[in-house]
Image 1 (cartoon, rainbow, N blue to C red):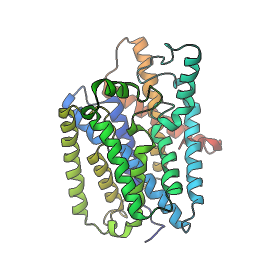
Image 2 (image 1 turned 45 degrees about the vertical axis):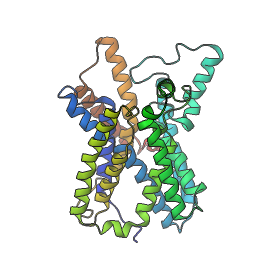
Image 3 (image 1 turned 60 degrees about the vertical axis):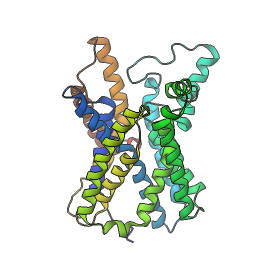
Length: 356
């Protein structure tokens, strides 16, 4: 297999995934149709599996390029950790606020306040999020360490079995837990997950493990996957999209769809889109601006603080929530302007590069 290949379409899909995360958190199509917005939000759930599978693919690619050296894993984790810390510092003033702006520590006092502050600002790195939306980054760092360092001596079969068991457990608990767990226990878990000291399982490194494994094996089978016909890949994408809608509506109907972060067919949709990026028939006919990869990496974390800031400011001044589609446009425009300003400034201030 070639290890020096570039996959231009992949970076365009990363931008699409980052924009999809914005769709999930704002719901921009709600003013047009609640049904339309729900459907598009369900499709947008491919985003996090896409990012995690991508990470697994490129970590394995980097290792193979260096003859299987695990030193690359350390290098990758270090780079991603600096990325995390850069955004953590930016978000320090906002960590104490939720999606809609309320001060989340106001009901705590004394030792309990200190415990909550420690949990939210530091422990959240291991159990979910510190700043809003950060769980994906920390989950990737921890998951990469587990899959590519702790599990490096496992056979392919053992890795596959580990991935299947982990993803089944996580999705069963978070997607169908309401059907199998008593109502009181489920309310406790869903409201705070482990006494508010952790996130739901689909927002921790546990969900990263199987997705990183998928990415790893996609690289190891790159030649075979690249040979798939574009028609086959297109059918897989279409079928995955339809099944994602059916799965989500089915889980909602059953009453078990309580924590809608990942689902079986959203993972299948993410995998199918990556197959499209790998496909030989199209990968060499798409040009890629040099800044696109940086832009997609900036879009993901930048959106959370802007959503919180705009919602808090508008609620305080206007007295009601802004139109969701307008908010989507404002956040995206602000992110884009900030990115190009920072990208220009990074030529003079080197540490700015850590924001992407």
